[in-house]
Amino acid sequence: MTEKKSKPAFYQEFEVFSKRTPSSQFQHQFSLLAPNHEIALVMAQENFMRREPVADIWVVKRTDVRGLSQEERESLKRLDNKDYRMTKGYGYLKKKWRKYEQEMLDEQEILSWGEGGKK
Image (cartoon, rainbow, N blue to C red; front, side):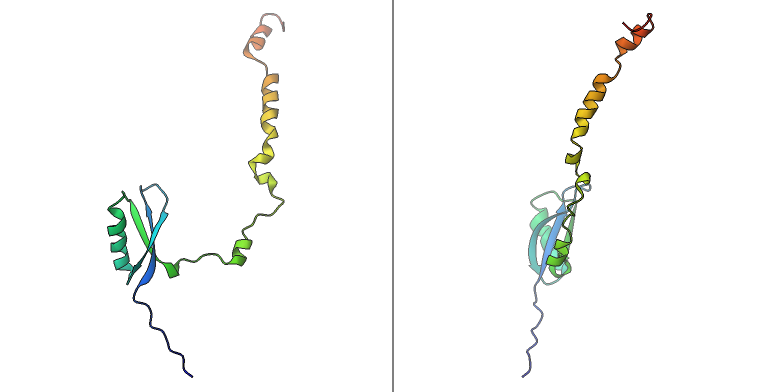
């Protein structure tokens, strides 16, 4: 028994990313079907640039976009012993700083020393 080889599809899926200004980040906009990269870019420009101002567009074949596997996503989870990296662990510092500021010498007290001692 021989297997039939399927012909590659004429249309390929592309993902379109754009940014509004030269300093902004790229954002995913939409997917489209096209026979090749060149046509996909033209279609993206025609469909997207007419509607909004755009500084740049990326058109990427969907098969070239790689996502993480379930195992790789599991490795992204944080370790439980890293609370010191979170700012919520330093909440007590504000209270300590306020106490320190209250104990500081003020300008009037320092100037009074020149007048013959602390009053």
